[in-house]
Length: 249
Ligand SMILES: [Zn+2]
Image (tube, rainbow, N blue to C red; front, side, top):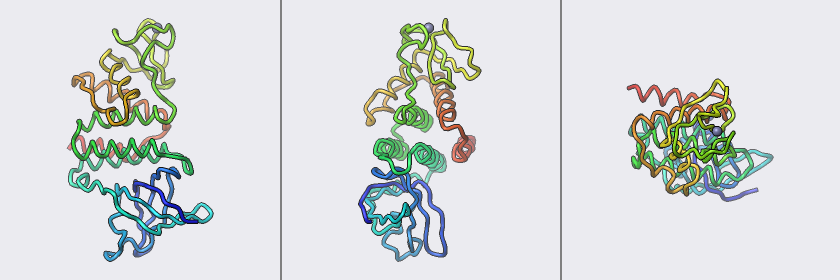
């Protein structure tokens, strides 16, 4: 059966002499593996559409859960991301996270939109890389059913907007300092970080990275965002190690 969808290539693996296996996050079928025959030939009409970060209108053939590429019309290839090693590393990490949190066979429209907006932001330097990374990690968790509730203390219900609070990473809840949990994975949050978390979770996806934060609070936000998503994913990511290595260069 043939069907049309939109999708972004988040991983490419060579297959045989001229083909590739593509991991694609689609708007309609979640994350799928697509057999792209002959696309490594320079003469292939789908050469660009079958490269990492390529976002295209796709015509796919499905047979017993196996997908084959029939046609592709490139919408954008995010090519500039390949020219800056730090941006490239961050883009790879965002793609791996999006792929890990997408469910095969299910509508991934929201995750796809979040990824596209974030890659566009990285490509065009709409914010610092560390801000985009932290905002993506928190928003992805929120869109996948794990929104950190930063509005009021999970124990006593007190407003969290005016004083420091404690983020229980394992439970995904935030306490005022009086009710601080006994969890071992705790991060201290300032009112500015709490405000930023609420912005990231609640704002329209076109504005979720549009906030300012001091360098000190940025460090806290990055720390809690990364710990939070790694706890939800229950695994590490090679692309995250690569990004951190590139940050040190
Ligand atoms: Zn409390």
